[in-house]
Image (cartoon, rainbow, N blue to C red; front, side, top):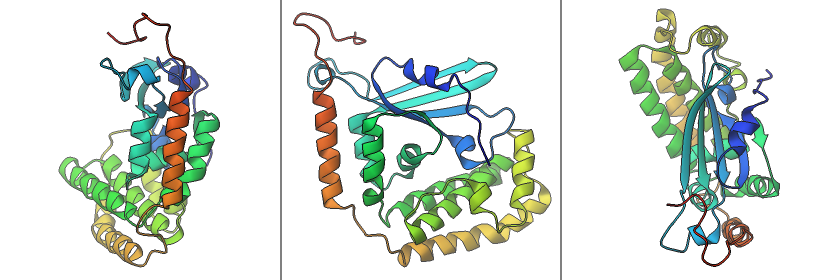
Length: 262
């Protein structure tokens, strides 16, 4: 179940104009059903220097960059550490998956510190993210008839159920769906075409399975051993990490304009 990440992915991430704390691969590569023409989703966190946070001229708290390399569409999104920390200290499953992705392109001591704090920031409220995300993807595959959002719906619900029951994050549908007989066939079809149609026989299975999985996620949420709120000590540690990392960034000499800011 190895996922191959291009060697140049690290170069693409470190080309961002600010110090990078980490970059990981998200999207279909993380979920175990990348197609031959899938784009590569890099998700990262950078850190702005203090003078681009506290003054009139502020740096970008989110950087987005699209390009094509070796025929692969590359989608890079990076959040400044403060924004990333605020999202992490919420029920946002997106940033949790980005932080804990096993497909690591760039790492640092700060990245490892964030990863160590993450389990103590996971709560039963993360179920709301997975229920909402799944509902949107379900509407999309009903409207378009495409396989991709159907796989996303399955993956999201199964990830949410696993997280609520175990407190552990698993995003690979090949692992999550190993007891669903038709999942390997759908993944194989998705690998052949990014925007291929949902097979008719699979649609019939999903019509029964999606409502059942949604009910399972709701039940898992209601009976989850996860707490209802983040560990206050972990939140304090996250705050200290942001402050410490920010203040460690260099400040330009007096009279110089902040780099990268108009």
